[in-house]
Length: 79
Image: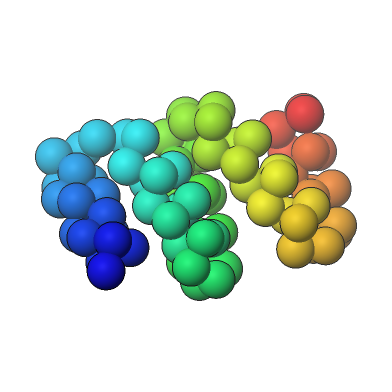
């Protein structure tokens, strides 16, 4: 359905180096329950300087009760 279509468009955007696509794809995966893929996308987006992805990953870790990862994230990025 719509998730598959959105995933296809985000992946196309990645090929043209639309940095926001990684964060958006992470959000899409999170909504689908694909948590490992979501985390991977957020981390890649953060690595290229996407501050929104940093915020989203912080929220993601909180929702998933990944408090150790959350603390590591806070320490690494001074948030």
